[in-house]
Amino acid sequence: MNLSSIFSQQFFYENGGFMITILVILIIGIVAKWRLFAKCNQPGYAAFIPGYDIICTLRIVGRPISHFVFFLIPVVQIIFGFILLVDLAKSFGKTSLLDHVMVILFNVLYVLNLGLAYNEEYQGPVYGVSGAELKERSAHLA
Image 1 (cartoon, one colour):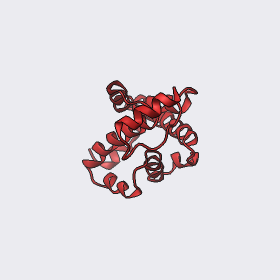
Image 2 (tube, helix red, strand yellow):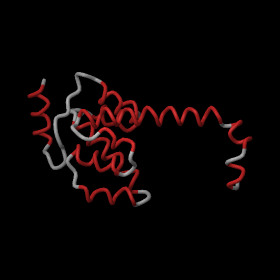
Image 3 (cartoon, one colour):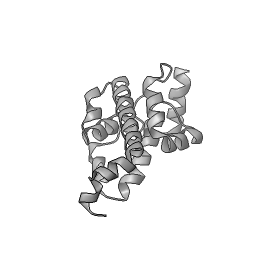
Image 4 (tube, one colour):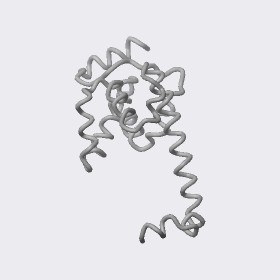
């Protein structure tokens, strides 16, 4: 498959539904990040800027900005992305194994829930924080 066949009218005609689905998921993801960033006192417009959104997410979970380098390494970026999502869930007091699996499998919808739900509160950065302290934070807010 060459580049001219990808951008042909036939390609869009045959794959239009798939492309619309991807576009809808992308829009939902951007709205989810925007609301999440606003809830965590980060600039909402960062959801529109590739790279800067990762830096804001690193700030939310308390990781150093230098960890952005992990997103530049091809296979490591996937693994580190999952780790960052789990840390994001922990930042909202979600410490169970089920929550960690849910944030990895349904990340766009899970982040949308964290951003839009009124009962979900940002509890602070979690990088370098012990498990006992995370449990104490959750118990204190409940």
